[in-house]
Image (cartoon, rainbow, N blue to C red; front, top):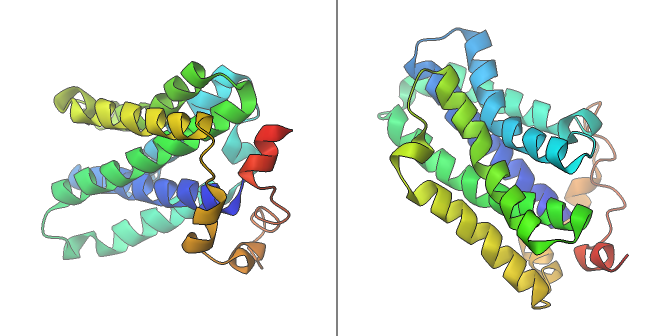
Length: 208
């Protein structure tokens, strides 16, 4: 995975971990509840995707998502009292996470299968499955069942990404606009070091 898509996935994980932790805050849960509800949207959809694709689960191979989720949990646990509306922040965090996960999920599925339809389906699953699990655990009606735009947005994001990929759009130039390459080379905490080193460009990966 290129540095660009590592960044997309990381920001999506952080956004979803914030939404999950805020859901726990609305239910007056303890720190364990914060962690559980943050992990569900942050890694739940990606876990389902990897199990369906029969590939190693991404957070088992690379613990970076757990570290990022921990940051989100602590940020909400100690800072949620400063928020005026937890519900609005949850909706916005969900929107960011959904958009980014739809693309990241579709990209990984395409690298594994080469099938555009499966890739779009896995992009949608990556984006929405974890949030559904979070809301069920929190004893709430899942947001995706309350607002149709959530599923539609996930589908559109994954579909547009796949359409651009099949049309030969080069995503590599976006990498330079995102973050410098050397930012991803560490040093990282244990479990993170080397995650972003020696990454192959997306175009080269697709050709192999």
